[in-house]
Amino acid sequence: MSNAQTVTPELRRWIVEQAQAGHPPQSVLQAMLASGWREDVAIEALEATLEQHLDADAVQRGLPPAVPVPEPDLAESPLHLDAGDRRVHVLNAMFNPRVVVFGNLLSADECEALIEAAKPRLARSLTVETRTGGQEVNDDRTSSGMFFTRGEFDVVRRIEERIAKLVNWPVENGEGLQILHYRPGAEYKPHYDYFDPAEPGTPTILKRGGQRVATLVMYLREPEKGGGTTFPDIHMEVAPVRGNAVFFSYERPHPTTRTLHGGAPVIAGEKWIATKWLREREFS
Ligand code: PD2
Ligand code: ZN
Image 1 (cartoon, rainbow, N blue to C red):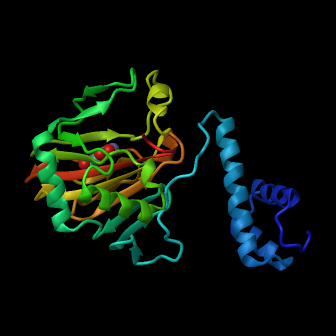
Image 2: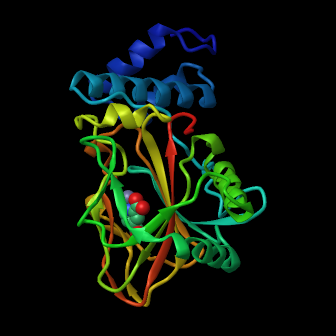
Image 3: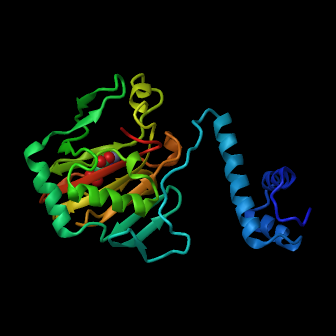
């Protein structure tokens, strides 16, 4: 192997061969270090090569290709992240699927401001109807809701900028904030947030900014019991604590992302949330 610290096609081929021969990434890394590769270059080359290889494999099996997704900077496992105007707490982080629980994302005043501005505009929640690209009342979603337009007023704008900084994704790629209100018994049955490529209405929906690639559910008012955000594939439930949020990303519109999630029925009290969906490109 060459000692030049540039990653050549030969090196990539060799990495893939090692993986195919069943050598774990840690042993491949050790072999690279032993032949003089700098650790940072070796790790980067390994990660990028294996990721590309897995994606090519997935596409060959008929899956949609993976695309870049928003990602908070958790490389050094920080306890806090600087989101511009606020220090956000990192409470929990999972890699596969990428699910991160944040604390202290919103102040109590911000939560109340969103709820009060939304109240006069609430209607029974609609979901995007992927058969036609329109909207429909959906029995799986028994909450009421509304959308603000992006940057509609100062609190919305401030929160959108905070989110953009937190997950390193342009404000312009975000849909308008959606506010949802769940009374006792209301729920949102498990679903994926991306648009199903097999549905005939999806190409129309994708004209505005491409696919959804990540979701941030922010808890504005907490119920007394129930109302957690559930992830059935990973047996996880996030408690809907006011000011906290759960972030998850999905690099392809496919169940292999294991991002199936739902809003569990509220058992006592009421739950209010704000959802920010992030698209691949500018959403206009
Ligand atoms: O209210 C929730 O916890 C929830 C669960 C699943 C919200 C959404 N999805 C959503 O807004 O997409
Ligand atoms: Zn959802």
